[in-house]
Length: 237
Ligand code: ADP
Ligand code: MG
Image (cartoon, rainbow, N blue to C red; front, side):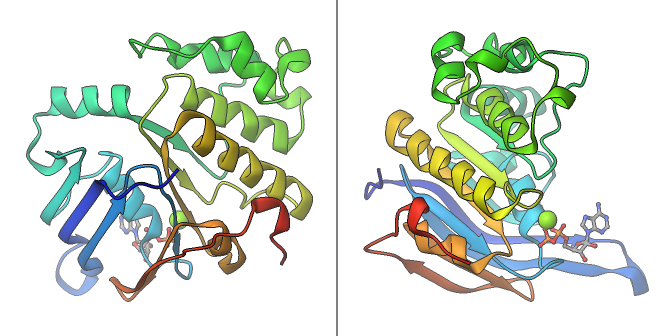
């Protein structure tokens, strides 16, 4: 549930790729503040820098300039070991194509990250809440795309992270399954209180957000609080 407490604070964040004629400025001074417990949806066309933004917040890439404070701690000045600790302790990542380990079962894929936390969730309880308990001994290829994404969410969640970063989490799923996954995220936000950032090019998803960010030409052109988010089950597109 959204609070008034700033949790992720991004200030004048800049990132480019390449040099000379090939230089591409992707983030050209991003400022925003996301409160603890919010569901934040970032919209923007393909190539607008959404994944780059998420990777910077996730400590997967280095910024050129600016700061990223998560829970008051500036990622851009952390030593690599501390950045690793931040990723293990604070962060869950969910991707469009699930990125499960094919040779591990559904349960094993979730167990993989449990030990990274001092306070992991109970895996069987988590499997039940994800609707995966009866599929726990199957391999990823033996379950549907939606179930694979549930498993990926479970892998991110089992550490009990403060921040869940989701990069086009429904991009590979059909309409009905997409809505089920978004409902699951809503449940996760409510049950575990984690702050969720979802990047997507699907504008309809923004209706379930507490905060909507719109990225264009390397800048945030809209940063709006949504006082009455729509339940994921009611979304339509
Ligand atoms: P989005 O997720 O909104 O589609 P990205 O953040 O993936 O956008 O990419 C933004 C731009 O940066 C794109 O033009 C993309 O080609 C470019 N880009 C992304 N990653 C790299 C990289 N590692 N090297 C060079 N260019 C990149
Ligand atoms: Mg992307």
